[in-house]
Length: 467
Ligand SMILES: [Zn+2]
Image 1 (cartoon, helix red, strand yellow):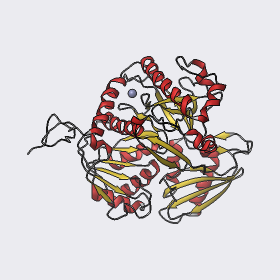
Image 2 (cartoon, protein in one colour):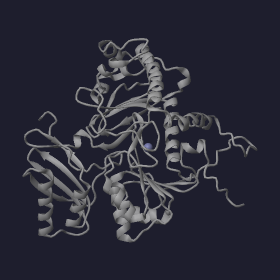
Image 3 (cartoon, protein in one colour):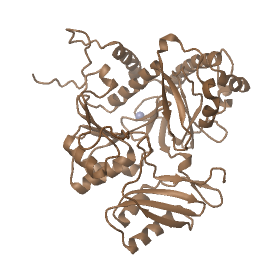
Image 4 (cartoon, protein in one colour):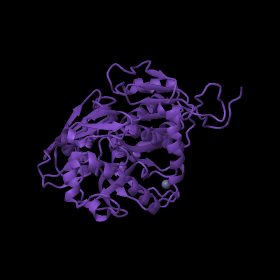
């Protein structure tokens, strides 16, 4: 039978039911949320804020009654029931840090989750600060997570019947090269819509192995971390692997540098669709369907960009990102400091009322500290990175600030570098970091990924207390 041109086929879960399809219970919940998301995205910013505050008030009432950790904080901010008009009181509530969560222990868990929010599951997020956080999530939270995953697919007009290739798993022994793993479906989206297959490879496979695998799989869509994508795209260019079916690439979890978009266009002619999320807080922002900036996911969380006084930044200003997931009653995160910075954008020309983040900027621990104590974001110039790659056959790099006076650059290279090339790299670094640092060049076969498969391109080992 000839396949239909309709790209999305709802999943029919009942015997003998074909059309119109009725999904199973979880799929029905997904579609119920999605139905609203399809409309709320077009609401005005004011309407979105109004309804967001209604949900926030419900969360605050629950928190006040059942989460001991917050009682003092809320009282101190004069943020008390019935939470009808939050106003400035909300801005007085201090941000929640990872250290606060660790210190709070079980006091930050609810004493009583509404029964219909489902069972509680937990995850541990490693973070790069060496401060792991255990986060509790209700089933309801996970349903919202799945709904935003679906919204992301719909925004980017993906044909869900295509093949999705995922290079993300870093667990030793799973999804190993050369075979990887094969799944019949794309994951939770299948509850609402029929999908094509998903194939998965361990992210610790070498660049050459990944390129060979992805060429063999020839997927319609690819999902991985930005730094891994960078090395994969370079390898595919070197090896002449083209991925003719590839329509777009999803990136997540790390800060996406614009030059990665360029190299993917060079390698495969495919655009990147980035999203900004955290395992403990869910989706924060998704790339606009029509632009390269991001829309905060206001239906799922309150996203704030704030200055040093924890007050909102204006358009064009850069500040710290605070996130309050609106539906996680198991462990409320109120004004959670995710550790990133973002630049606030003007309303989007696409017509969606969801607030705009022009860009997401690196984490504080990825900042360079100058000997005088001044902090700098270091890797924002895409042209600069491109120039670095012109100096020598560099495949991957990582800068580590070892002390106030010392930088180390870790390189994975195509061949041994000549003295003049090394000198060029030193000069590039001195110009880039604007201080006569002592520079060590260290060669490595592969750069180690963290437990989550992430690679950071700048790490500071300078003691945070030195300012
Ligand atoms: Zn937009």
